[in-house]
Image (cartoon, rainbow, N blue to C red):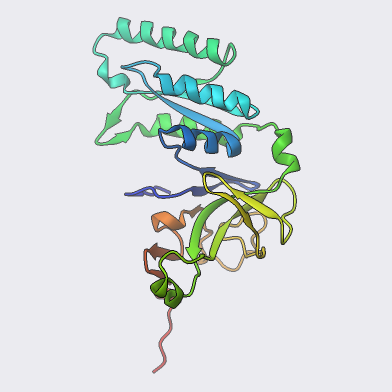
Length: 259
């Protein structure tokens, strides 16, 4: 199944196996984004420009990861089509690999993406990378298993519009959606939103899984396609958002009109 997302906004959840989901979150190139990513990531995919080499940000991010419990790390070398000389490419690969090992541990996985063809990476290489991610085992980090946390994949401002119109700086009520991890979340506890501060939790509700695992989903019929992707902020799923409305998307063959 090939899916093209023109504009990636927010996390993307993919069902990668019978008992596994993988959620991709893009980390921005600033220190606050890196600290946030280090708190929730199980696996960090470090994209390194092979034609330029390691940048200062890469080492900063590795240092932040070490402080937060050091999750699994995988390096991905890109821009290797910039090299015209095969010998130089081989030497660069060796040099970067050993530098990468110095930072993490000997034998840390470093992937090579040879370059873009018509704006896309080679299918075989991406397939191999995806296979590695799908079978990787993640070790539980002690802080995360003892604290409840939610990685929100979409949010809604549910403040009455009239109140916002009368006072633009009034207190807002926001609903956050996402998968709960760690331990249970209780009503009334203080919740820390990264980069914003501590807030009171008005309530927590369990919702139906928007992207259920194939083993858990009951077979309804052959026509009913299993949802393998969930990216609400990027417009993939049954709901599409813009700044003032939410649109529900229903497939044409599910819509039945009366006479």
